[in-house]
Image 1 (tube, one colour):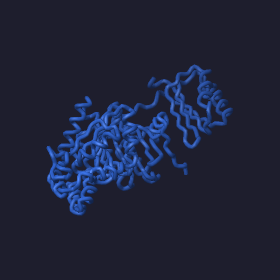
Image 2 (tube, rainbow, N blue to C red):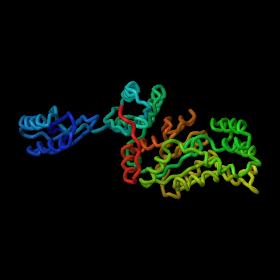
Image 3 (cartoon, rainbow, N blue to C red):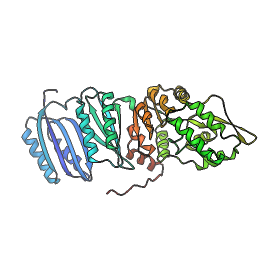
Image 4 (cartoon, one colour):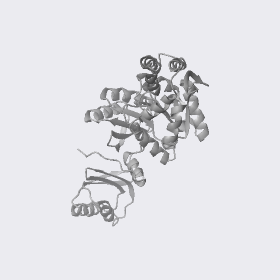
Length: 403
């Protein structure tokens, strides 16, 4: 087949039912085999590419296909050649681009950087058009680490997000997602909300920020903050849980992955009094957090048992993976702070979500849009897939008007 004559037929025009069927019905009158098909529709415009083996009478085939296209009010082009599609080079990767909005300048810059590395964009598909625009490039001939480095720098300049992953079955085999809670699954830091009720908000917020930047040892910082809560009425825990807001897209992310058979875990430097309720509310499979000591209805200012710190989060990921029967390569970890770095590093895919710069540098991918469900696109799950699954369960997602 490598040297055999082949024929590429490209059909363009207004899309409507029956065009594809009619084109292949026309081809069925000739002794050809179908080697490849590509079809896309953009704003009602069809582009259909058909690669076939060349018949003995190529001119007759072209006349027949041209007549069918004319009858359909479509345009058609022919390209004679030899062989199948050129095989894609080694080093195949997915490059996922997220923008809100996604400007032509950003696409041009990123495509240029791909070319600069010597790689080639073989295919482009849209994963979502709202609440962010997500586009995926299939790239061949690239080195993952070099592409990740070059594109991350360009993405920062263009104010878009880029994730680079190797092509392969592993992407579809990641079946355990483990996520940080504060400022990731939920907005803000629960301990700051508790501190506000204890009248020590400013003191605790300062320590929290230093810990998240990696300037303080997390365990020491946690114990300092918890000590400031001593005497707080335990009823404040219920008040804080009622006040917690999930990150936009959090329910969609968890709901969609659970439907697809994923296991879901949360790890938190916060407290089980809050995470246990998140587990019940969202149907989460695994959880690890700190136990806040309460005696006679009052917070004592102490933590019971080992602290879930940076090393503890990584250990929890390993434990959850073992319980679920997955290798670490089959896990996804999501977090925003310095105490998430170890967990992000050992996961098959570590995603920094609206994270500090040092965390983004340590992660495999960074997402800086405020929508947690954008992570679905990194896993090859499109917005259309999500909507279709929701529709099957009677959930209607409002869609913005197309500009």
